[in-house]
Every structure is written in C-alpha cells, then in structure tokens.
Image (cartoon, rainbow, N blue to C red):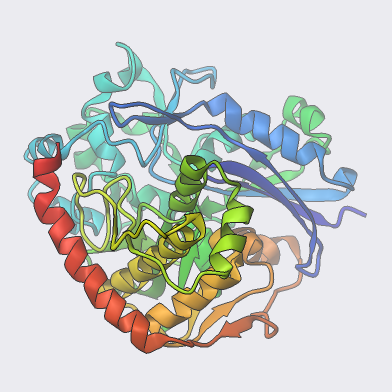
Length: 477
C-alpha cells in the first residue's frame, strides 16, 4: 500500500529528502550538498541543475520509494530563477544573499517604484526583494532574459522539473516585491514597473494544492511511481513556522541554519503592515501572516571559523564545551538585514587575548549568534516565551545553553529539530492525503538559563559594539 509522503527541502547549502509515514513519523531522511558560487563582487549563485542532482542523490539513499504516495516541497525563497520555454535555465539562480546591488542601487531603484509600494506589498523595500534584481536584469543574465519565465523559490524549480508546471506559494510570493499581500495576487502595476508580463510569473497556489502528477521521466530517475500527486508546499520560512507549531498566534521560534530568523504568526489585521520587519502571507490561510525577522549569519559563522582554523566543526564544538569564556563576537560577516539593514557593517572579535584558542573563539561565535537572536526578538516585538529553537544550529547543547542565557528564559528544542521544516510541510498537506495530524511533541527538551546575569552584561556590550561597528564601517572600505 502506498503509505509514505516524500518531502524535498531545498536548503541554501543542501537538499534534504524526508520520508513520513501516515502517522507523521519520520521513516528515513537523506541529504545531498548544494554548492554556492560566490565572488568578490558579492554575487551568490547556485546552479539550478544542482538542485535536481541533489534531489536524485538524496532520493536514491531512501528506502521504500515504491511506497511513496505523494511528494511535497519546501525551499529557500527570494531567489531569481530565469527559465527558457523548455524549462532549461537561462543561467545560474541568483540567491537572496546576492548583494551585487549596493545601497545606492537600492535607493535609486526605489525611486522608480510606486510611492505606495510598501502598502501594496506589506513590506518596506528591502535589498533582498527580488523585484530589484528584475529591474536590473542585465546585471545577472545575458540580453534576452527579459523574455524568460521567472521563478523565485528553489523548490519551485524542482517542481517544474517534476511536473512541468510553474508555480509559487503565497509566502514565497510575498518576498518578491511583486505580490499584493491583501489581495493575494500579483500586482500588475509592480510587475509593469519591473518590465515583467504577468504570464511570465508563476501561478500562485496554496501550499496544500496539488500542482500536478509526477511525470514519467523524473519518476524513473527518482525511482518513484509516475502520476503520484506533487503538492506545492511552501517556502522555508513558512515550513519552519508550521513545523515549530508557531502557526498559531502568541507563539514564536528561532531558526538556526546557515542563516537564521525569529518569527511568529498573527492575523493580517493585527500585523497591520508594513512594519520594520518582514510580513509574509501564510501559505494556506489568507487571513494570517507570519512576522519574520531574518539575520544573515548563523551557522555560516561557525563554518567560517572552522575553515579559518582548519578544524572540523564538531571538533571546534567539543573544544568550546571546555571553555568558560571568550571574546565578544559580532556576527556581521556579510552585513546584516535585521534588526537593522546595513550592507557595509562587518563582524569582529572584541577583547581578544593571545591565550584565546579556537575553542574560545567558537564559544564566542555561538554567543554572538545567541545575542543576534535576542536583538531581533526585541526589535521585532515578538513574544519570547515560550521560544522554540529549531534547525541544525540547535543541535549543539552549548548553543542551546548560550541561547537560554542570552534570553534569560527557557528555550524549547524538539527532538528532531533538523526535520522541523519538513514536518511543517507534512502538517500542511496531511489532511489532503488522509494522513494523521500531528501534535506538538511533549518530549521536547527545555533548557533553562544558568548564567543570565553575565549574559545580560555582555549583551549590553554587544549592542554598543554593534553601533560602533556600523559607525566605523565606511572607514574600512
């Protein structure tokens, strides 16, 4: 009997494939890395075909593929993906982290947009809004790309491969700068400002909609049954929100992956956008929104330190467990988006001592990430208790403890925090498949603060140092 749901989660550094049973239990999971090409011009790109290659590799490692009843997807948002009529890519996907447009470019393009842009989209113009890249398309693609079909979610490119359909979910659509958050449709005026015809934009469908059946060729490549339904799913911000059971009002969570964010759900009326943080459409319910405050550096800071120290991440974490203190770390290795937008600011270690070893620096990096979480929660005005921590970064016991200390309150960590985005997609589509609903996991670990007073003192220094780093940034170029 076909009794499994396969979920592809196209992350910023790897694609993960997760199999769920009819009861919502994880049967198996596998992942495959996805390389990112970066350069000194602050470009950040991924090959669209690498997403499909990673899907094939991850699926091949899973058992019982003949029992898969349906597929659903999640993935990174705010990408610019240009496809030819036959579905092949015009060029690499331009990622949300691409910063080839500087602050001056953003300001200049903003003057070309309607005065009520923020009111229409529900968000103030942000450097990562994809409409900016569309309005300067020649910086990313060769001449003629304006005639391409555009997608904006990594999972949407995989869906096109699976079904031949070009779609998007409301959450991902919100991040483009082309979506009217109140009508739930593409804004014709904004599309015209970006010189994009509406027929070249993907169809907006809710996360629990079936896009189509799995085509024969991709089915054979994946080892799956042709014709099984492919659900639209949702962007990673929505998937994580539902997986953390924060799709209910008055609950909040933090996601710690390569990047990070804090988020909570509210009604559209209560959100009353635009705000200083992101307001995203709920992937299914048009009357609700997700308030999200994203920061650029989380796990990537740890990966950077491991690369510089030539020590594996797990070894660094083990060394950090034996350290009692370290310097103060500002995690602005690629600028920052929230709680402030500053492309020029950069990170720093403050209070370095010649006796500090890699373990102490690692502890400082984790603490800096924890302080970034608190900074975002406070700036966004999101509820901080109870707070659920999810993502690969939440695996580290030291990270959990430093986060609880930084917040001065308990932090809840689900047992399988890395599978939470996939769980969110399961929750979105389970009812359509007749699969069982799942409830919050009562066995989640709660970590209580142990040294909140010291953390509060260092957090004040962190905020002051962040202001100083921003002030001197123009002098460092």
